[in-house]
Amino acid sequence: SKTAALYQELAELDKNHFLHPTSPIQQQQEQGPAFIFKKGEGVYLEDIKGNRVIDGMSSLWNVNVGHGRTELGQAAMEQMSQLAFSSCFATFSNEPAIRLAAKIADIAPGDLSATFFTSGGSEANDTAYKLARHYWILKGQPSKKKIISRKKSYHGVAMGATSATGLKPFRDFTNSLAPDFYYTENLSAEALRETIEAEGPETIAAFVAEPIQGAGGVHIAPEGYFQEVRKICSEFDILFITDEVITGFGRTGKMFGMEHYGVAPDMMCFAKGVTSGYAQLGGVVFSKAMFEDFKELSAGTLLHGYTYSGHPMACAVGLKNIEIIENENLIENSGKMGEEMLKGFKWIQGERELVSEVRALGLIGAVELKSDKGQFAPAVVAEAAKRGLICRSVIFDGMDILVFAPPLTINKQEINSLVEILHDSIFAVE
Ligand code: PLP
Image 1 (cartoon, rainbow, N blue to C red):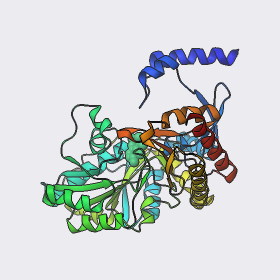
Image 2 (image 1 turned 90 degrees about the vertical axis):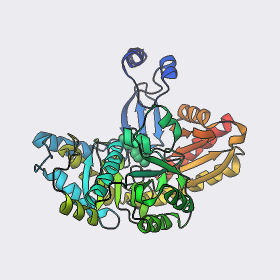
Image 3 (image 1 turned 45 degrees about the horizontal axis):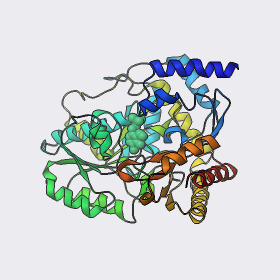
Image 4 (image 1 turned 180 degrees about the horizontal axis):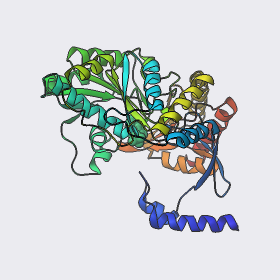
């Protein structure tokens, strides 16, 4: 048929010319692309063969407002027609970038007030680490340069972001990293204190943490952890950076993940949900105090900037996207539907012996399998894809975890479908 021929043609071109990000190269070569998507609508994705699947991951934890939002296409089109690009270097500026920076200051935790824009989360993390170190140079403490992160963390793939990533396989993938990165035990404030004391607080620039660890398997901090972390960072004069690349913009049932803990960082990285993936955008928001210090102590040029820092079209899309999140009460829906999703996971846990633990906060969740029986998560993911659900497995370091992050627009019926397909997929492989 025509679609079979189209798939064949594209699959061949894909295999010969397209090096996929974070991909199993040999499997890709043998089997070709599992899905060649062509359309998205709400929580659904459709491929060129006409398969319709629930996007249980919001693609890469990012399509928060769901697929097929023509308002965002309209916002991009209007901005691109008016002014697609101009520089924000030196003293140039543009209205969407200014307004988005102001909007983020308005909605971000604590006194976070000034945004440096990037094209995505990896650049946001590199920016945070570089500017944290630069800050200590300005403050006359250049020995404060070490960055501490946590063992199951993921912060991206730029050189600094890779170096901060606690998941070791990402670091071992390349054989030389950025210097002065250190890793502390997961989710333990006591361990952080010990690491700081062992390394010497006078050598440490910053500690970075995801409010909920995403790519490392959706690990939620115990009660009191982040309050203690904040106290420790202040006590030792160490900057606290939160990486809200996944948890930002409604994912956890709050605008930002840290709101669950009532804690404000000195710097906050964001990306993904800021545009719901409709344009490439990320950034770092700095506290008022840090921004004031930058303004007061910087003598020369801030020698850090990407061509696309403050991209007008991306920022216009970001503004419209936040407006949708607010106007459609998607944060409230994330909280409510997150509870439904967790209820569903608990039901599966009761039904299926293979499940050891389930958790969720808003619309980010995990179903953990009994790893003593072998690794089943990849087989469940493959089975679920056949049955109409996309989810992801996390199998680093012997973990056997299924993770979920559906669009914040999801309704009860769609949650039920997700839960049902997941249940049947686990049943099929156990
Ligand atoms: N930080 C976190 C917490 C992430 O989950 C990711 C991506 O998944 C990144 C940073 C990197 O973002 P990007 O892929 O946009 O560079």
